[in-house]
Image (tube, rainbow, N blue to C red; front, side, top):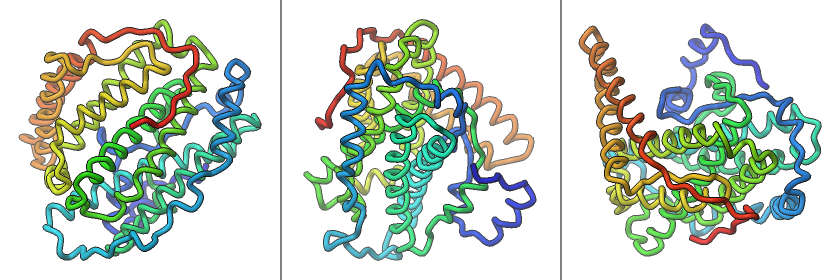
Length: 362
């Protein structure tokens, strides 16, 4: 892995990088994170129990159906960034930077897995996935450069803080990230097919094939979890429940922080997020033995309490001083209670099918 910069080096380097790169290096509860893990444990994975499905998926990924997709063509419309309403411009940039950081996070993790490993099956998988995520991040960065605000990815690799997760936590978190990414992108794409007048940026035209990469990556992690039945049973079901709650909660809070962006797209944030949750929950039945009861009024009330508490925490942080510190503690306590209420809402239980393989259907 590339060496992480010292605090002094980060401070000096940040003086010469743009504000957009600075945004991407932030690490908060809501920002996409960079991860590291026990690569030796992952190198010991045996895909024998799922060999037939594994070989079929890797053959599909090796064929590289999107190798010519992430290129600007006549469908790429020129836009006048200066003509955007300032709030919409800020939120669109925030959306693009957050998306880029999430994609590049996957690229960094997958590339490191490939570099550190000797397991042919695992190395081949992560070579394909790091290839895809690099394309996604580069394509978004090209879009940002049109506004003169591209992200310095080399600096980001060294300056961004890394979070250590055990491999099983990587599986849960990344599986959900990939599947919810598919659900988000395809929901936006289908909406804009029906309402092209709301397509505020040409990048949305590329979302259909793009999200199919996310779908395939999710399939890979579903298969990895199926190599060991313990990963989706016993005490680990409580961990799955935790990650489902965390991923849905973070998405809901983050999306509500971009009201102008979603209004410009013609999307009601709550309706959109609930639709994404439903799609993700349905897909996750391929491997998870539970789904959250997202239609339960108790869960939805707690979700809204979480949103309000997180916004209050952010406001208190910006306020600063003793008053801000006290406000952050109070808001943080409310956020914790709201999360606990979501987590403890009864879930739906089911038995995953014998074969986990899915195909994009939305």
